[in-house]
Length: 158
Length: 291
Image: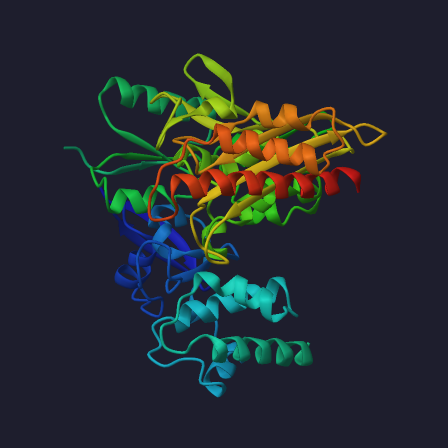
């Protein structure tokens, strides 16, 4: 039986009908049309579907859509600012921290969560924090450099 | 074959009633906390429809209480939240480190110690650390609450003592003294994101002269369930937790281990490594008991 779910995504309230076993990832992509969040493994191993639920970084494939009732969800679509890309997004472009791009939304959401919790992380902290985001293109070094540069620029702006 | 249903009861009574009625009606239920194991299993090996009973809206499963006598950790509190609690981390560093070894940042945003215990894997990292800290499982059922020592909770691979109409509400842990230290170590061939080949949790309590007055040792991934090893604890009690006492505790762990050979390690290797881990975790626990 389908359940009615009302959830705030990137500050906007969405009302959807979902099956009890449907994931938040499926609801975001198939019911709300927010296809920026990607499905990689569907088992919580790759981090491509990373979103924030009430500010907490999670894999949206391992959250049921029904659990999002009344919660605040942030997806990659909520990261850019009205005036343009977020600093983290700009730095990923500048450092060529992506190739195929499937993992990128997850990395950017995860990086945003990291820098909000720890604005000045060292390299080890960054690598451990992002260990749940897999990238088969870049070899990670470019991603780490983009995150370090973004942290520096955000600290400079603040 | 039924259909999937979802319920999020707000009280222990409602949750137990729901489970009990479903049990009597022959409807399959599945308790959901963080879901990092449950949802993966539900979509692969065992995809039969069931009623998912989300226990996260029950206040008791989210309650963290750090009291002078004991600590209560609600069964559904995500490990990321526990890890952010500086007071808890300073009182039970070994247990929190064990939780912090499980999964990625994303997984830790949802996964709970209660869930790790209820998943009842032989390699669940928090279980030896809970054993070392003498944790007690607080279980709610139709006839009220009961308590089970954590080493008796898991009964087999993926099996535990919970009845179909019962819920693990949380873990009750005696408050360690200022002269108590705990530690948990596991061995994996990588630096992160892996399942323990072997693991050991140790807690030691010292008197004013540095003599060990109490100890507990739990080992994981070396039997069908994590094991309490009283022989290893006895080897430490009365000593200054020096090299020879740690060596004796290590030997007791190796002897208590009943591992299997699989892709992660052989019987011989696991028996050896679990002793080494006990020794090293014991040394860290000692440091923490002193400082």
